[in-house]
Length: 447
Image 1 (tube, helix red, strand yellow):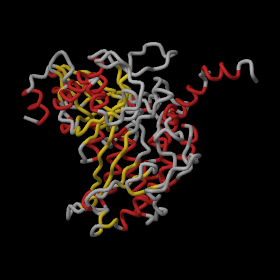
Image 2: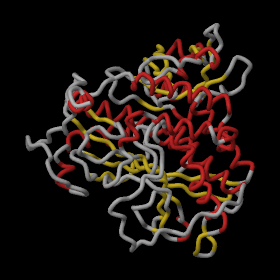
Image 3: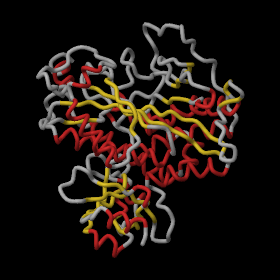
Image 4: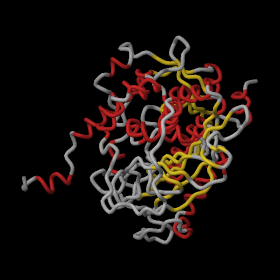
């Protein structure tokens, strides 16, 4: 009996959600009766689902990316990702698939494939990346009319937050019923969630994951987003991972802590007898040099760039510093064996597979090219009253910077980068046709 069969039998599963992440990080797939899932062992689904935009449209170059015959790809479930679906009415399991072409190769446009490829480069170097994501989100009042602005959810007291309540225990307890349901769902799915805090925004929270394998944690973040939305909906609230859902509130990020371990010794190669190693500095130099070109993976939506604004607690520069949150790349104080780099650029709206792959790719290029970072920003240096924004301010600009970066395109795969840019440019052009209320208010009779 296989691991899959044993799990489904043990839990008396009647239905299986066979899933994969599309380009935006959303779950696609099929529902199977258990007997059908076991009989087929693998699944098939049109490869076009990999390159559908967030609006459900297609890129202008769609048939340059995907075969015009609209062919299927093969789905192979990864037994390590098998979990219960705790919010389902009947005993239901979920599993994440790797996507393959008909000739048996990993599909070059699948998000999981891209992360697997980057991890294989480290494996050849005898290194294993270790990451820990921190995911921020908002609980908001249900909103079914997009013409109305979003509002923070109302807690158990019946009052909506109106002030900054960072790290407030009582502010979290306002949503205790949702949090209890969330932790119950996470436990049922073996998600390695750690601490939860109240962030600086109204009804904004952050949940941390225990450090571990990048692919496993990308899977967990993928599952967690669905889990949180379901937990919130059970209590009549929306949960959103939009990077900037409300104009006067800070954005939501997915900071990625990262380090490298020697597979033979188990030693953190970022540490050199209590001080940062040369490998650490090369890796950091890669993040500094290539993050501007990779920004569209960390900020993948048109809304993402609203988060990168001065005075809103978001990274806007390529500085780095020790325990310095004014820098885009922060080195937390930690024991030598836990020396790591925190990439603060990714938004909560990113595709976790692609954001993790991109940050590891930047560091890898830095190591191979032996890049050196700038001098660190001093911890006691106050931020400028008028800080310059050093990164792209629109999705279109971010995509151009990616297209111009040959080393990053090569390491991620040119076919994948072409597909990614096609999907994201389609989203940008769709957004660009919308006339905002600001334009009507200020330009209608004044220009």
